[in-house]
Length: 182
Image (spheres, one colour):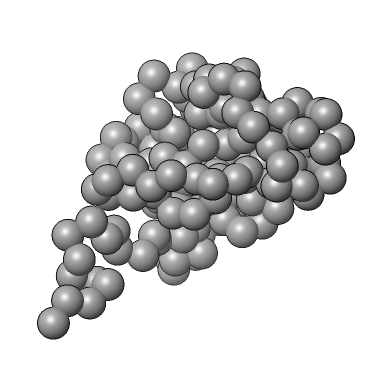
């Protein structure tokens, strides 16, 4: 019998930031400070909202933070690394190391529900559905973040950044970014 968990194209349930937050006090403090750093491209989202904050730990006097870029060439990683380092320095951690990991690859499934809500309030349609591990699923409609209409269309697959597509609403006629499912 085939179940959802053993289907070859089904990914395991995403591990959320809440589940990744360390249990020991020192590491949890590092996590909490790093989680306040905002994404420089979408400043209403923290790196925890985006799901790119994947780990934090204290190694003696050193704070180590693990982040996964939304894609391997993401130009925001340098700024995020500097911002995480500055935030931890401001909270007393002088020795900070930020590790960038590419495996497992980031997926929009790691975004928090709060992050998805903030995206919509900011005027960017959040990703719909879950990332596929096999065949790419088609998205039938993207909801306009301004008027909630499903009568929208894609203008171009690549928007202001590679992780977004440019759409337009056929009802309110406003263009908007759509954060693509990855």
